[in-house]
View 1 (cartoon, rainbow, N blue to C red):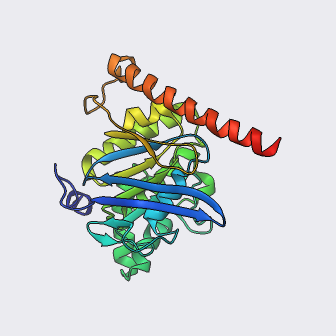
View 2 (tube, one colour):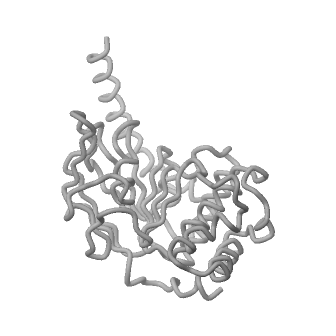
Length: 273
């Protein structure tokens, strides 16, 4: 699988993400305030926080969907000025083109980058095989399960060989069993390609299972409250959820998020009662 293997290895040279003093307002409403984070190449970082804290807004700023000052967000020292192939995005909703086949959906990115139809389709087949869906290449998205559609979305994000993979609650709409399988599959993919991952979730167990570090954000305007290194073995063992280190980290995260969620609730009650 040459297109995948060239990204592999233990220590990638690319994918360093830096966010400095990021502040974002929507109208007069401050959403993010003085947010700072550095993610090293090949690191898996999850953003956690109360509802409305700006997790997805941070992700959209890194993706280039939200305009920011030119020196605020950078990838490998290059300021983010808009969307780019160095960043792949996976959304909670599958966002596939319903009128295109699975193969055509994945080939779309390379085609937009100027690849020939044959080359784009070859790249798409490589990544569909990578996510275990090559046999469904000629199917349409509506005929696939939710988990399968999300795997197509991951293949579509990976096909352009991004150094940074951005994931916005990608498994939030899935049932518990499918979600667990998708988490396991994602870790296997990540261990092979070693792209830098910035992953937004509201699920503490998911964050602790996936991440090297968990970053907890405050009630809005969102800022970094805790930058927590996750001291759990990789590959993650089957009994990881029963490990004392997992339970201790979960208690720490849960206490802080409950505190911030209460702040949001109290603020809303004062302002709308």
